Amino acid sequence: MKLAAFLRLIRWKNLLLLLYIQLLLKFLFFSSFNVTTNLSVFQFFILIGAILLITAAGYLINDITDLKTDLINKPRKVIVAKFISVESARQLYLTANTLGIVLGIGLSLSVQKPTYSFIFIGASLLLHFYSKKLKSKPLIGNITSSFLVAMSIIALLLFDINFEIQNNPQELVIYVTLLLSAFAFSVNLVREIVKDIEDVNGDYSLNMRTLPILIGVSRAKKTAAFLCLFPLILLLVIVVNYASVYKFTVLYLVLFTLFPLLYIVLKLLSAKTKKDFNKLSMLLKIIMFLGINSLLVFSLNTH
Image 1 (tube, rainbow, N blue to C red):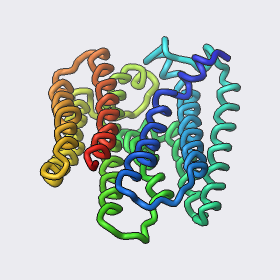
Image 2: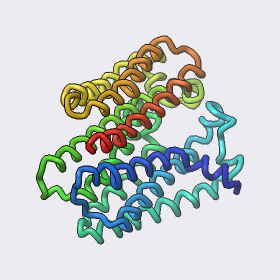
Image 3: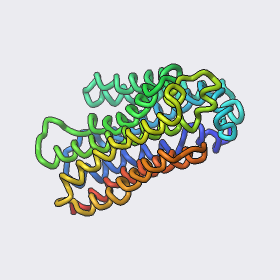
Image 4: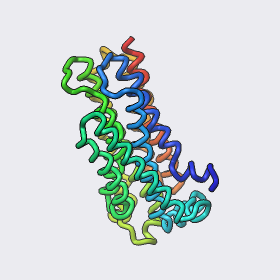
C-alpha cells in the first residue's frame, strides 16, 4: 500500500483542517477568554483521535461505496481497487471505525457522561447510512454530511465547557462556537450541492437521485446561490452585533468571508462547465478555512 494513496483515501487535508479547528478552539479561543474547561490535554487528544478516526472511516466507506460513480466522475482520483484493494479498504474502515467508537465511549465514561457515547456511535452509523443510502437522495444527503461537520465542532463544546458556570465570557465563547458550527454547516451545504452539480453526469448514469438530477442543473445552481444567504446572514449578524467592539475581527470577516461568498453567488449563476464548479468547490473550502481563522483574529483582538 502506498502511503500517498492511503493519505489521499482518508482525505488527510480535511482531517488536518478538523484538527486545526479543535486546536484553535481549545488552546487559543477558550483560553483567551479564561473559560473553565473540563478536559485535560490527554482527554482532549482522545476526543480528537475519536473524531478523526470516525471521520476517516466515513471517507473510507464512502469511497468503497462510490467506486462505480468515481470511475466515471473522477477516474484519475480513484484509489480503491487501483492502489488499495477493496478488501484492504474495508479492513481499514472497520479498524478505524471500531477504534474511534471505543475511544469515544472510553472518554464519555471517564468524564462521567456515558450518554455522550451516542455521539460517536450515532456519527458512525450516520456516516455508514449516508454512504449507502442518503448520499444519492436529493438534499437529505447534503444536509447529513454538513450536519456531521458542524457536530465535530459542537462535540468539543459539549465535552470541554462547563455549562453550569454562567458568566459573560463563557456565554460569548458558547455563542461564537455555535455560530462557527452554523457557518461550517451552511458553507459545507452549498459546497456539497456544487459537488453534486460537478458530478451530475456520472451520478445520472448510475440512476442516482441527487438534487441537480431531480430539479436540473439550472435550478440546482439557483438553490446553491440561495443557500449562500444563510452564511451571509450569519456574518451580517456578527457585523451588526460586534463591529463596535471587535473591529479587526469584523473587518477580517467582511474581507475574507462575506465578499468571497458574494462572489460565489455571482459565479454560481454564470457557471457552466465541470471546471467552473470544481473551482467554486475549491473556493468554498478556502472560505471555510478563512472563516475558521477568524477565531485566531478574534482571540488576538481580545488582548
